[in-house]
Amino acid sequence: MRSTTLFLAIALLFGCGPKPPPLLLLITVDTLRADHLGAYGSTLGRTPNLDALAEESLRFTASYAPAAYTLPSMASLHTGLYPEEAGILANHNLFRGSSVTLSEILRLEGWRTGAVVSNYVLRRGTGIETGFDAFDDQFTQSEANRDQPERTAQHTTAAALAVLDELLEAPGRGIFLWVHYQDPHGPYLPPDGLRERYLDAALAESDGQRELPSEGINPMGAIPRYQLTDDRYDVGFYRAGYSGEVQFADDQIGALLAGISTRGLLDDARIAVTADHGESLGEHDYWFSHGELLSDELVRVPLLLHAPGLTPGVRDDIASLIDLLPTLTAMVGIELGGSFRGRDLLAAGAANEPGQAYLATLMGSSNKRWGWVEDGLVYVRTRHPNGHESEELRSLETGAAITEAAPRQAMRGRLKDFRDTLRVPHAVEQELSPRDRAMLQQLGYLE
Image 1 (tube, rainbow, N blue to C red):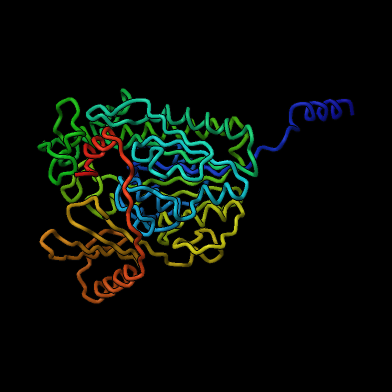
Image 2: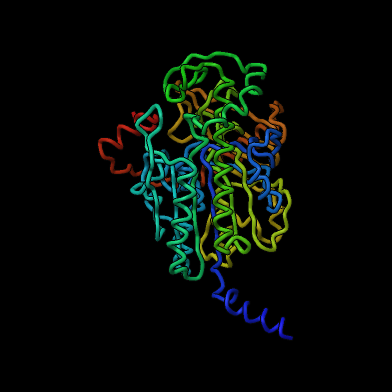
């Protein structure tokens, strides 16, 4: 009896404070290829923290970003609309918030909202900050080869935990925290020892010691000039650097989750992890860049959903980043009254729906490309500068080309039918300082 009484007294003293608020955590990783996670088939051990989370999550194998550029892709995630519908055709357009955003919905429902971004194109003033009570875009350094502000993963994690603590001071009905890690984006300069961990294997690949020229910002058949490091031109060196950056981001995501756990918020957290787009590491003769193509290396992204009571597993139906707004609001018990392109991926029967995804290169590529994903197929139509159009059809599962006329014609029709429904508002340009304009020109987003 005395032992029980003592235990209850201790529990009352130390364990019966106010219940922590619910946390909705959205983690996006810039330029992260799905196939570099162990959960998606990699055997190199780059992502133990994300792999452990994937074991306890619902993992989507066919999740697509609508574009291979950051601001259009993130605008889609936050609005549930495709980039063209949100008026975001490039990284220099203004995200006007004319559509209701995820953070606005949550704030109207009494949630406190915070974001920590580490990519310059997501800075305050682009409009992506709409709906956030706290928005941290403090870039701690510049890229090695360009005057481009950025923030590396350890500083991103520290800032995210600081914003979380700020939101905890007046948590409301819950806390929404969006954290965007920049590190896998080039130039690939991981901390010491991380490139070296993967270098021997990368150089041992059949083309690992191939040397390439370096030219331009977003070239085919060459290394972009901003990627050049240590006067190296062998492709294995850069592939190993990318792997090291992915591991660095994973290390810090592990630190973020540990920090959330120490605050008592992890066990009851709703978590989504995805990427804005991927990266081409030589596929289709496109090296260490993104934006020009609609290949799976660029637009097929990881997607993990984790929540108390959500059964872990694997889903093969097609998902898009536009599905996250209705999915995440439903995960925290908010019923949406508006109409959104995306679907609630966790709704009853959703796993039995085939899903669809629309893709576009928008203003970022030399050739305009549009894609449609459905029924295990990926269709891409290309308009060349001379006005000629070409098309390709591939298997979603294997990537193999499909030459039969009937499925090609069917997918061509579905893409056309969808594009006929698009309502594209006038795209507004951001108000840019001379320095911002110069930096966007360095990035290749402005002439």
